Image (cartoon, rainbow, N blue to C red; front, side, top):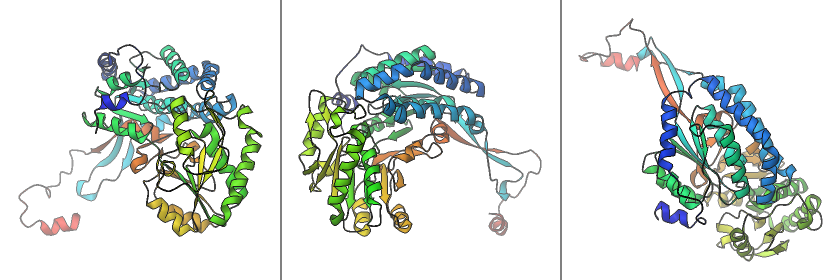
Length: 472
């Protein structure tokens, strides 16, 4: 495995002045050790400050997302900005209940006793955010950190520079650096941050860099939450409503120009349905973006030239059923459906993270389940069938970070559910209470009185075996 420094150097260009990460961490740790972050009111005040800052900078955020990814204000609000307001509101409402000790069970052998689970803040945390939803995936973990009573250092992605600048300005104005600090930059800044000892590292990105983060964290035995990705499949049963299925898959695939970690990555479909499905996807695309998606204000662009070239290479791995038009200077890549891609091709082996949708011949649900189970566990899985028993079977016989029946991507919006991966698609989860839990240590506590001190547990043990069997 390469060193952290060497591996990060390959992820992007160097940028920014040298960072004194050690001093930054020491400052936050000194503040955390004052225990100022423990009270409920401190946590609520930080969440209120975050809400005020988000609302004050909303126009700048929307402009930045337009600059970085060509997102329309409507799409940016739908997929990034609006959900943050909802998460802050929920955290403000629920944080008191989240902080309360959870009652546990105390067995007979330790009675009289009361058992609890306390939520202790982990401490000084590092949040490394990606470029595809650069605002939402920066702020959502921060909500959990503040609700849990932690401090945080946020490292936005250098590949979304406009959003990174807005985040830095917004959070620097709203928080003292010992509470929340933003570090802009590229590989060198990430390397310096990962050399420090943190109480939690929360990383969202690809599996390759996720391994680098895990390697760095292991040096200090630092816990991690890794929100990664993978190839999220769609399984289409013959009983599915094909028109609705095509429209929903097209929306989830082509929003943000396919640059979504839970976007449908490929479709497993009976061969005789493939042509009609491709036509229905094309119709849906035209209804969304018009005859030429490049003219639509609702269709985004690829983040940079390197990713544009990567997606162009992947598109050559099969036959284009429709789409495929592209323009390198503007980084426009049309919504595209591809057929007949070899299963050994890069298109079918790598996470696409772009507007290419491969259709894979799969005659029945048995074969679809076998296909999914033969590959690394995906971040999301989507099953389409009018027959509820088919969907239940897919859920029971496959493993994925999350799943949706008869739709795509919408589980991300269910804040009462933990969002996260499994296996190579990640570890840990967040959203709602799960965000609070991600930044908390669950401390087991048993409270006992001095009265009724049972002698049974004390030596000598001779003659007590029958009693142990009875009570244990």
